[in-house]
Amino acid sequence: MNTPETLIDNERARIKDFFIAERGYWRPWTETMLDACPGFVEQYARYAGHPARTGPLTPRMVELIYVALDSSSSHLFESGLQTHMKRALEVGATQADIVDVLHLVAVQGLASVGQATAILAELAGPQDSRGSQAVSTALQARIDRLGHAHALRLNELARLDAGYVEVLLDFIEKGRPGAGLADAERSLVQLALHACFTAFNPDGVRQIVATGLGQGLAPAELLQGIQLGAHLAVHGSALGAKVLQACQAPPPREQSE
Image 1 (cartoon, one colour):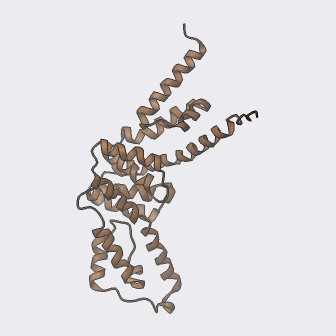
Image 2 (cartoon, rainbow, N blue to C red):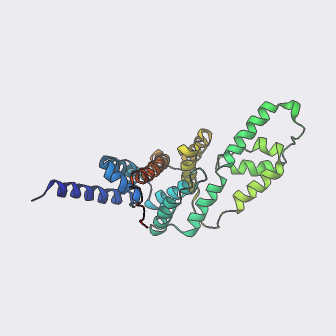
Image 3 (tube, rainbow, N blue to C red):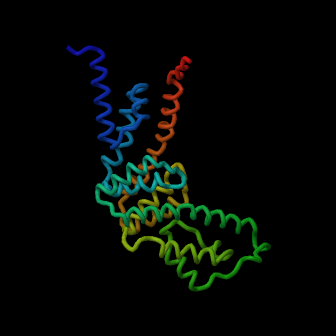
C-alpha cells in the first residue's frame, strides 16, 4: 500500500528523472527547488527543453550554442560551460568547432565598439575631424569583404584608427582554427550571442539574421538559436536557491569545552 510519503517520494523521483532527461544534469540547486517547489523544476525542464526537443538544429549545434552562451563574457557560467562542452564533444563536435566558437565569443564585444564609435563620430562632427583619415582602398576592401558576417560597423572606426581595424581584421581572419564551423553555423552562434538578454544587441541581431537568411538558414533554425539564450536566466534562480538553502541551514552547534 502506498502511503502519502511514498507517493510524494515517487513524484519527486519522477520529476527528477524528467528534468535530467530534458536538461542533462542535476545540481544541488535543483534539489533545493524540488523540495521548495516541485512545479518549478518540472515546468522549467519542459519549457527550457522545448527548443532543443522540437527545433531543427542538431544536438551538436545546440550544444555549441550553449558553449558560446555560457563562455560569453556577458555570462561566464563555468559549471554550465563544463556540462555543455562535454556534451558537445559527445555528440560530434570537434576541438576545432569549440575553438571556433570561442573565437566568436572573443569577437562579440567589438560590435559595441563599432556602434559607439559611430555615435562618437556623429556627435563630434566635422569640426573635430583632425584625427580622421581617408580609408585606404585595401582596408576598405577588407571591410567590405567581411560584410555583415560579424555584425561589425567598421567604417567610422577605420577613419579614426585604421591600425586598430587592421589588427582586428587580422584576428578575425587569422585567429580561428583552420577547420571548424561552417559559415552558416557561425551565424547561428553569433545570433545567439547577440540575441541573448545578457548582451542584447538589436543592430547585431538584424545584421546576423539577414546574413543567415542569405546563407540559406531557415527561419525556424534562426528562431531556435534565439530561443536557446533565454535559459541563462535560470542561473539567477540557481544562485537564489543556493542562498536560500544556506539561509535555512541550522546554525552550527557550539562545541562544549
